[in-house]
Structure formats: structure tokens, C-alpha cells
Image 1: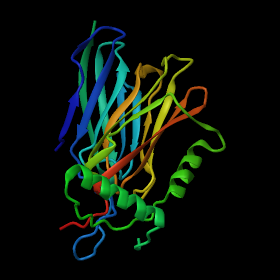
Image 2 (image 1 turned 30 degrees about the vertical axis):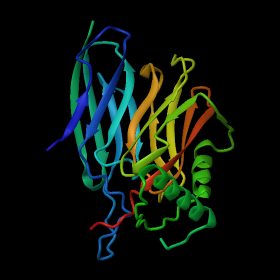
Image 3 (image 1 turned 120 degrees about the vertical axis):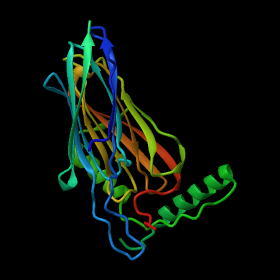
Length: 106
Length: 161
């Protein structure tokens, strides 16, 4: 079950600089909180994010516990050609999600 | 994680609460567990990244609210002045904090194809503190911007009820 929100323009002119917005549903438990009983809640975070544009990596990020729950991230890229963006989040406890989005460049 | 308070931490907390009282009219009770991150850890994390290279102030813009009610989700944008060409671009942006349990916030690897060196995200702040953004350019130089944020409700270390 993937709960991701991706915002990529459907169309762009060649050379346009476009903004890509991403949000992945995730608790991002930082690993420093305790229950009322005093037990430490183990860390459970997304540790990395990558974006590929027609197979080429154009953006990558490392996340730490200081990233808020349901990590939101926006960044930019130059629209070069029509094709596909692939987004990948990887994290603790085997978390791995991939989402894609297409763009038409004229 | 003991209850270690340095005099400066206490003073900063007091100032943070005083600031929130002035704005909000009421002092919230901050039941934050004291954490061990220190300005020294921030400096060590930055040295670990840049080595002996100088970090200059400038080129980097760090947009973050100076006063936030809720440290659990603080919007932040980092942008860097750069032509973003093959010869002259931003390679990466690193964000650090002063007083969360650990000094790293996020690392962002961009490159000339980005067209614009800018990222936005939402972060957690466990206390009123300094946030530092550092950019590494394609010539290897490091540039930085710093912002002070007053937090009235801390994140990360609160008890789960």
C-alpha cells in the first residue's frame, strides 16, 4: 500500500525548469521518544530518497530523524525530454516504495 | 539522556518561553526530555563534512520561520545562488541543527540538471535553536546560511501518551 503524493507538471517546454513536489506517508519515528512506561520507541524512518528521469538519477536525499512525519520534499529539474520520473523511498524495517509519473516535453 | 542543562541552554529556553509568552499570551508547559546534542556536536558534524576547508557565509538562503509553535513540523526552504551550468553549479546542500538529539537534518544531492538549486521540506526541532544550511559548489567551495528558530512546543523527545 503506497500512500504517496507526487506533483509533476504534465507538460513542459524543453528547457523549462520545473518544480517536483513529493510527499510519502510515513510515521518517521525518530527513535528518541518513550512511552509513558518508559520504553524507548525504536527508530523507524525513511533514510533515503531518489528521483530518476528516464533512468538517470537527477536528485537524491538522505533523511535523518529530524525530518517531519510524512516527509515532504520539493526540488527542481530542467525538462529535457518526454518520459518518466521514478521516485524511490527506502527506510528502516525494509521500507521501500517506488512511484512514477510521466511528463510530455514539447 | 540525562537531565543535563548547561547555563546557556537554560537561558535559551527561558528566552524561548519568554518570547512565546509575549506573542501567545500564555506560557505552554514544555515537558521536553533534555537531550545531549550540543553546539560542539554541530561543529563536529560540519567539520566531518567540510574537513579543513573554509565555510564562507553567503550565496545560501535559508527560509525558516523565526518563531514556531510546533516543532514537529517546521517548513524550511534552502536556495543557493548559482548559474547551475556544467562548469558552475551546486553539488549538494546539507542541513544541520544545534540541539536535536543528533546534528544532521538532511542531505540533498542535486547537480547541473536541476536548473535551480532549491529544496523545500518540513523538519523537526526539539528546542529553540540554530539551523545551518551548507552548500557545496562544483569548485569544491562551501557556503552557508544560519537561522535562529524559537520553538514553543518541542518535537522528537516528548512522551507518547
